[in-house]
Structures are given as structure tokens and as C-alpha cells.
Image (tube, rainbow, N blue to C red; front, side):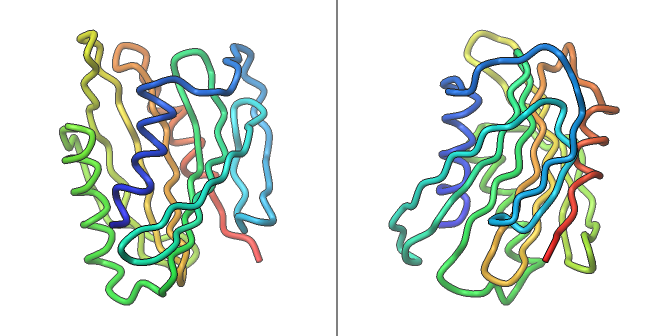
Length: 176
């Protein structure tokens, strides 16, 4: 299923630790990914990791472009499915429900939006951790043909910055 492939990568990055060295200095920079066909304004230089996974839907290629700043992370994840998504609205909701279930998250807010004319869903969740600290995740998800994009910011609840999350998420643009 779509949600388990993408969110197993997300869980690995945020719950079990990133392989990216943490950075503290924020130098916002525009990063363009020709392979990912997107650009976004990152608060630090990101690293890219990719993997493929066989699923019941077929082989799915996943890529994450991540900037890790101490206890916060900013990332664009994209997955290429073996088929085009036909019912986009339903798939957006399935993706959101998968996050809520798979990560034991609580939905804070959710609103439909669009990116470059593509239907999208922007939502915020509370992510409880075993140590009692909560994280806030802000997620923008959209489908473009066979590709699913997730633009994600995860921050400790005590330090969550709506300004930083909005800056990153709103900077996401599709490119040719």
C-alpha cells in the first residue's frame, strides 16, 4: 500500500534517527531537483537517499531529500508508482489516514489545496514519542501522474515554528 512504503521511510528518518548530520545554522537556500522535478527553499543543505520496494501494487521507487536541523527535519519525499493515480481525492485521504494510523498521530487540522493546478491536501498532526515528547508534523501531499509527493516538516511541539513550516511548504514548486 502507498502509505506503508512512504511512511516506513519517514519513521526511519524521524523515530530512529537520520543518517544526515544535524545542522544548526539556518541558511535558507533554493534547492532544485531535476530527478524529482521540484524545487523548494530548504533551511540547510539537504541530502538525498533513494530505495525501491516491492509492494502488492508493484515495485515502488522512493526518494527523500532531507535537511536535518538538530531536532527538526524538512523533507520532500516522492514515490513513483507503477500506475497513475485516478481517484486523487480518495488517494489524498487514504494517505492522510495511513499517517494517522501508522504513526499513531492525531490530526490537528486538514485542508484541501492545490499546487500548480494539482489537487493537494495540507494537514498538521501531533506525533507522540515514547519519551513523552510530542512532535508536530506539517504535511503537503499531492499526486502528479504516477508520482506522489510529500512535503514534510517535523518539529518538537515545544519548538514548532509555524513560520518555518509555512516557509518551506509554500516554497515547494513543480518544475519540468
